[in-house]
Amino acid sequence: MNLNELFPSTAIRGTNKELFVGRAKVLKESLIYAQKPGAVLVIIGERGIGKSSLAWQTLSVLSGNTEIFEMQSYKFSKTNLNKYNCVYVECNSDTNNIDGIIKKLLVKEDSNKTDEEQKNIYSLYKELNQAQEYTKLLQENIGISEPENIDIKENNQDFSLPDKLKDRFINLIKKINEQLENELIIFIDEFDAIKDKGGISDLLKTAHGVKFVIIGIGDGIHDIIEDHKSTKRKIRPIILDRLTEKDIEDYISKAQVKIGNTKISFKDDFSKNVYTYSDGYPPLVQKFCDTVMDIIQLEDLENEKVFIDDIYFEKSFKKVLDDETMLNVDLELWRKKVNYVGKEKILFFLAEYNGWIKEKDLKVKNTYRFKDNIKELLQDCLIKKDSYECYKFLNPYFRLIVKDIVNKNGNLYIFEKKTN
Ligand SMILES: Nc1ncnc2c1ncn2[C@@H]1O[C@H](COP(=O)(O)OP(=O)(O)O)[C@@H](O)[C@H]1O
Ligand SMILES: [Mg+2]
Image (tube, rainbow, N blue to C red; front, side, top):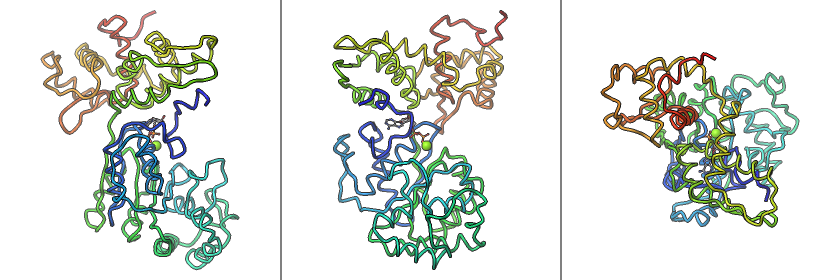
């Protein structure tokens, strides 16, 4: 195995599910909610938290592949499971309305994606060797016959079908749902990228019997939840939180591998540091680990054994912090927003903690202007508050930077513009 495949920066899919960790409870909930008649499973959480990975694992199990239960020792009764035909669309600038999604679902995509990633209604039929049947269905319901010949680019005349496209599409998927032995589940990822969400909520309302899973950071999902109070569909939200210390231990111990003659082993202090500095945020966990792999590859692997310990963590940490493109944060802008010592104190305090802190435990709460400072930090999107009145950094990268500052000197006024 290649070292770089150990910690992929993309979502964990069915093909590399052995790398998936934790999430036992939410996976179980996903499986149950997704199967409920009339329900729409909605997976919500901050960018990078692991929504797509969870969605892919859900898809994989619901497609009949249950290995993950054994791999992860998840306890889940298979009698609670049916087999489905799952299709997956990831929204982007090409799919900013319902037409874009319909196209992606109906037409063969010309890309290097694996079969699993390409799964749409077209591939479903191909898999079932019912291409003819599919063509017939398309002809009767949508008015096109040769899915292969349709260019799915925007504004393509061949596919600018009449206004009725949506209704016809809904008819088609309902038919498919009735015809196929296994029911259809449509996964719509990056839901927030859809500009015109109205079309989608109409789709949910009218495509009776068809199951949906919607994945997004949650901004636009609220509209749908509101919209559905009046319909029969029940929205079942799952909100993802950060990974736990145990999850990160698992994530790292899965990577204990032998490459060539070199046995790589991770020491406990390494995973502890990864947890402390990532705050359980998966992309940071991934970056610390993957950066260590880069470092090892640059070193001569002459030794038979490499122990990844806190010294390696420090090297990786420095690299991650130095690489601004990696962090992708506007530190200057943050500096400007932290214009009071009191605010800085709050941030320093939060940086010492993993996870959420209750307001009463924020020891700095009696400092001058505390309430205002908190209010401004919230407004400026530096910190966030959950429904239990607990606080944490909004952006885990910012937490990392603040933590580094605390470690180095802990000086106040650190956010003032440097004068040199
Ligand atoms: N449960 C998990 N186990 C292992 N790695 C994960 C897990 N969840 C997320 N990751 C990793 O974190 C990163 C972001 O995951 P992703 O599913 O793309 O998040 P999102 O869809 O919420 O933006 C990827 O590098 C992915 O491999
Ligand atoms: Mg995603």
